[in-house]
Image (tube, rainbow, N blue to C red; front, side):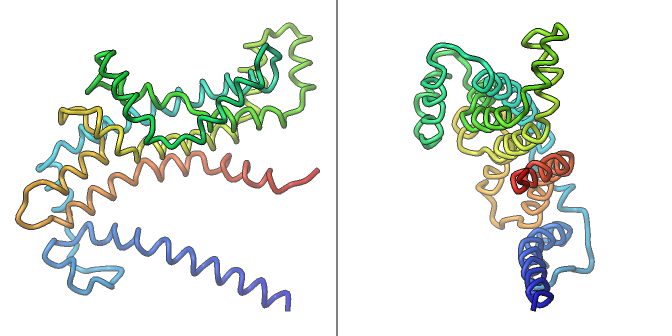
Length: 274
């Protein structure tokens, strides 16, 4: 009976994996198919007569390299800044005693309850008053700070043993040395988790870049792809759109593969009870 339940469990997981991988594999395969042949035998996973013309045409029709660079730059700086500031703030809330600490942390938690769409109008007016519309600063600054990152890092730092930090203080380390040499390396799983979530969120961001960018040279990939999809064309070039979509997914997959080891170990730690 136990073997049957294990078999059914693995079978269910395999079916779920196939259902999630099939659309992605179909997208990759169809991105190498001529536009006229995409809707013929659409159920096939693999098509013959593959070509790279869709990828060539994409780089000819739109400045895809500029969109890609903008998205990569914004997502990378946002991720680094979010991880740094969230780690510092989370460590301060977890280890330092200062006035109104709990009240400030409660305010940060309250910001997590506010839908991001509510902040778009005041943020836009703020960026306009600072003359930052259509700049990298407008794309990056609002995403550098977030309540979720501070909450995640604080909870992880609270779970770390204090013995190593106290030993570092005895050896003469100040607060920042203790943080960067002891606490932060121990929190790598949480850092990797936060970095993955932040990078994916920033990379897929559409509404805010659409609002604060006007010129083509400042557009990110999601905005550029939407503009290309809605451009005035007699026939929608689905093959080229699929090629754009494949290019959009490459950095996200790469970031997850780089942080997969720490991300999975962080999840597994939650299921281990000492």
